[in-house]
Amino acid sequence: MNSQTERHFENWDLFALGSLDEQEMNAMADHLASGCSKCASELASAQAMLAGIAATIDEVPVPEGAEHRLRQRLISDQPASTPAITLKRRYEKRTFPQRIPWLVTAACLLAVVALSISLARTRRQLLQANPISYQNRIATLEQQVKDLEQTDAIHRNSLKTAQERLAEAQSRVHELEMNLNQVKLQVLRFEQERRVPSALNDRVIALLQSAPLSQLDLQPTAGVHASARLLWKDDQGLLLVARDLPPVPNGSLQLWFARKNGAPVNVGVLEVDRSGAGILFVPPGTALNSMAGAMVTAQVGQEPVSEPGKEILKALP
Image (cartoon, rainbow, N blue to C red; front, side, top):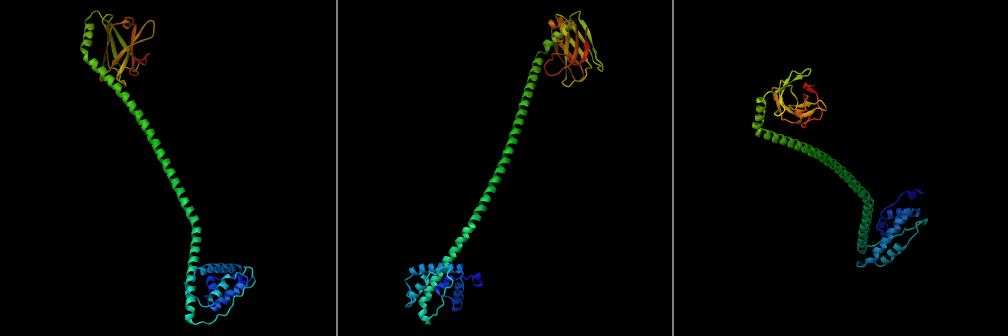
């Protein structure tokens, strides 16, 4: 490439208007003659723009012959590949008053050209900046969506944990309600038993006053120092009197009747007080009539067990 084409000039619009000094006009003309295609294209664009603008301006009178010379210069379209373009010319000397209309027209054209160039540059900058701005905006929105999704996941986990805790609390409340109902039943039984102590006492007194009474002492098992005695009469019932009983978790023991033929029969619960004493009355019946022995075991649960547990006192045949 020629060294002349390595340098590119600006202000081709002013060059097309002839508003530059003679030295700069000659330098730019020599540059075009060197074959710079880029500058030739810029000059052609400036000439086309000025031709369009000049065609719309007719308010300001121009000197005689100036319009013809301007149009001849603007419409002369030289190809970009033209090896040489000679634009040198000699300018006729004119007085300052004669140049005023031309200068006013040139200034107007220059202002319009400068504004058009500024708008074009601004548009190119906006077109170049908008994609980046949109990409940044899209990236920001995507990050916001991710943050919202993470927040939603955290809230869902918190809700799930709260629901699990609520289910546990409801289960606990249900269990407490069942325990409360059991306590209420025990209170009702206690009140019922408290309302009829005189009848039970009368039966115990009637049993003790009847004679003769059968008696049976229950022997403690190994490691137990308690003692108990059975007093009964088949048609009056049976009375169990025990003392020094060992402490038990639920405060009650189980009384069983042994039979000669068959499994032991659960006949009642012996309540133990703080001193280790307990009294149990068993009404007359088939179990008492078939009794061949007795034993006291640790009770399991609130309901009577079907099989004897660990013996505390016993008197077996």
